[in-house]
Length: 318
Image 1 (tube, one colour):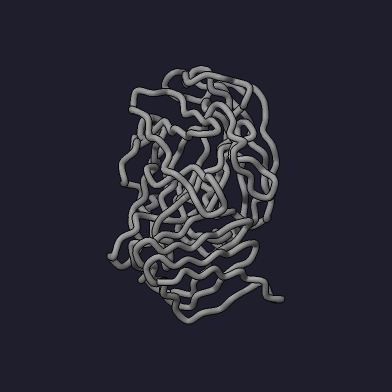
Image 2 (tube, rainbow, N blue to C red; image 1 turned 60 degrees about the horizontal axis):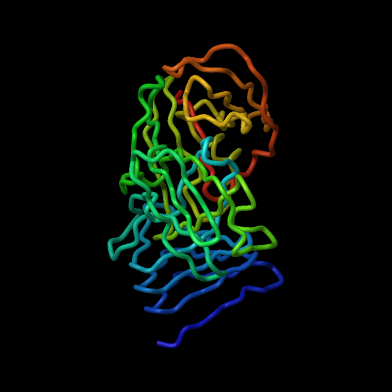
């Protein structure tokens, strides 16, 4: 089958389709544009959709996802911490199979970009390994730091997930970054890892449709943006009747190079949909059980009205 390469360069910046089918070994490149598909996407084996330079896939499904196929959507996203701090993520893809609908995700689906349309699987280290690493020829992830938090309120209730393909669509997860740097490939002038900002290639079946997660009154759940497109966070929070309308974003002091909880310094910034305001986090110290202690500093204010692909955050049930 002849491959095809589609550059979307329309005046409106969009391409609209009722449905989209990719035959085996075909691909589409979406650079700095977005594609809207009214219904399902079917990506057959060895076919790919490459979202690059801010490219996005949006779908108009109003019920459950009917996406299918063993082919994969590929989208780059960068963390902003090194091997000692956590990023909160929410995957835009799940396992790619012929089955219809969203599937679970695991960090084994993360890859190291080697060129605009090629990547190699990241090495998943043993669970005893503390530090993820990167070089110009390798990316190694420490699954020891991959956790979920579902309708819980205590530090002890973090669910160790590791490298298992057990992260449901819409569930967020934590993962620490990497030490080292990788200057072997750059997108838009930014290297794979200039230091403390690892780029990952999320590859799998694109999430779509209505995605539900469990929340409970007064309990916290780690969720995020589960789609391969930006999320209007304000609209999302205002539309929910079972959460407080506030999203919580974790941030840590990057000068503290330790894996011991008692050395952590960090806290949650809050985005309130009602006021459309983000309050930078207050950093606290913690004891060995994760109990919050005294104030030790503060974090940074960021625009939060729109959540990028892959962004994770906490919500509280109401």
